[in-house]
Image (cartoon, rainbow, N blue to C red; front, side):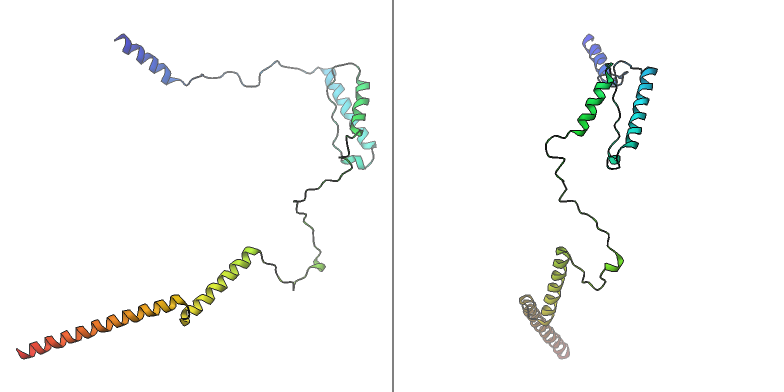
Length: 188
């Protein structure tokens, strides 16, 4: 009796709740970090400096992404800004000299209306050409078949001739039997 009750209790506990239970805490753990007023002000000034620098810059560099300054923990911000500017202008290797283009990219060129040719023959794809050729071959075959020039048509005609012959023989037998019945009925 004791074994049955413990089995029932264990079974009931296992079946009621899924393993692991409810997770109260999300995956975004860690300490909270609050930015001080001074740090916010410094970040805004850096952004304003970057914007003014872009406005003064050449038109070629206007298409570059704006550089957002990172938070700096150390006090020597002047020396780190100079180093980061130098890092942007320096290029490694010859990758900046080589113009790379995707060969698979289809460039859509706009055509002018006056350059369009309306009498030009439409180019068909390979699949469309094959479909047209297949349909023409089928039409040719059906025409030859109707004329009785194909092997299949000859076989069909031979089979039909045999069937006609069998039907004529069956019809003759029926007529003879009918005639025999009439003669027998007249004799009586």
